[in-house]
Structures are given as C-alpha cells and as structure tokens.
Image 1 (cartoon, rainbow, N blue to C red):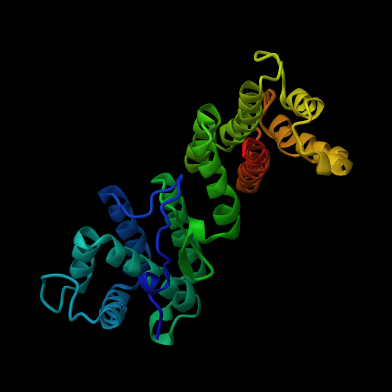
Image 2 (image 1 turned 180 degrees about the vertical axis):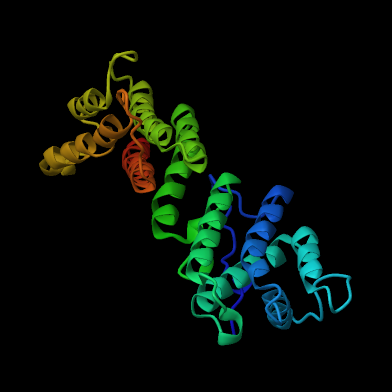
Length: 304
C-alpha cells in the first residue's frame, strides 16, 4: 500500500518560516489540474483512459467511493471538483499520489496505456512545472524522488535556515531578517541574482547590527563584509577559546558568501546576460544562514 503524504508529514513546530505550508490558493489548484491534464489527456481515445485509473486508485486509498458529485462515467470531472474544493491536506494527498504514479508508473507504464507517447518527457515536464508552481506561490513543498516533501524536512532548512530566522527575530536583527526574507522572495520568483545580493546584504547587516549593539566603531556607508569581519575580530567579538581557529574562521567568512555574491551577482554583467543557476542561489542562501547562526549565536551567548 502507498503511504499518503498526510501520513508522512510531521507536525508544525511554530518556528518562523519563509514558506507557506497550510494554504493552497485557487490559482495553484487550477495550475495543478492543468498539469495533470497535460499528461492524462494524452491517453484519451485509447481505450480505458488513465483518468479513470487515477480516480479509482486514489479513492481506494482515501476510503472514498468517488471524488465529486457526478455520475460514475465522469471521473475526470469528479477529480476536478476534488482539486477545487478538497481540504488542504486532502488536496496535497492527491498531488502527492498522482505525481507519484506519474513518476513511478508512467515512466514504465503498463502496456495497455503505453501507445506511442513519450511518457518520460511528459512526466519530466509535469514534475518540473509542479515544482516551479510550488516556488511561484511560496509554498514550502517540492516533489523529489517520487514524493512530495516539505522544504523544512530538508536537513539544511531545518537545522540552519529556520534557526537563522529564529535568532534574527528573537535578537532584534530586524534589517537582516527583512533582507534574508527578501532573498527567499527573489529565489521564489526565480531571480537568483537578487537572491544572492539580498543574502549577502543580510550577512553584512547582521555584522553591522552586532557592531551597533556592541558599540563597535565602523563606517555604515562604506564598510564591506571583509572590513566588518576585521572589526569583529579586532574587538575580540569571538570568544578567547576560538583564538587558535581565528584565521581559518575569518578566511571561511571572507571567502564564502562575499565571494559568491561578488562573482555571481555583485558586479555588472556587461553586454551578455549571465544566468545564475539555482544551485548557486541555494548555496548562497544556506551559506548566509550558516554565517548568521554562527555570528548571532556568538552574540547571544556573550549576552548571557
């Protein structure tokens, strides 16, 4: 038996978030139905269509007899009704189940459904668009390895990004928190260049706020990440027991996020538009979060 999404999902923990988990807007639901139709409509006119198969297998898993108010013959219509009106958890169960069957079934589809269709290409395109729509609506989900997962079930997000948000919020780093959230907003829109820029700004704002709170002297208009790191070091911001590791720590901070920002997003690109891959944007966001957790954590511990 297939274990539905609602059976796998963990309870929310109430921590600050950058994604939405419990609301699926009408536009997103409509887009999901269009994606489903792009695949399933290809099989209409070839005997028993896949709409009926998907309807019947999902209703069996949910313990239902049908998904909508229409007669037995109108299973596609019933699925459309279910997409429109089902509760959020039930809707996500449907998305998870249908795309699981797409990924596991349509790639090696049963002979009676195979025909002459390029099922691999259809499935790849459907999954790619589903993940794009998740990001477009700021929804904290992704379809990977045959199932829908929550973004906060990823180790980096759970162990680094969320603690960074929590620390910024709790310690009053308002500017850095706003820029960190903007970075995720740009990432959601596919604007990776500005996502990296905002991540870098959030890292710098974190250090400037520490300087403000600690009354360290710095130039608010001119000091860059490298200079701010030097100021923290010269003011013995780091605990004494870390002194032997100071050089490597400083190198890590200086050669990580600031370099990614400067090389990938911080300077003019000339006459040719330079695309920035999702991997670099994700790296910048996670690296910014790691740096923030370190610096704000040291600041917080020093205030105890």
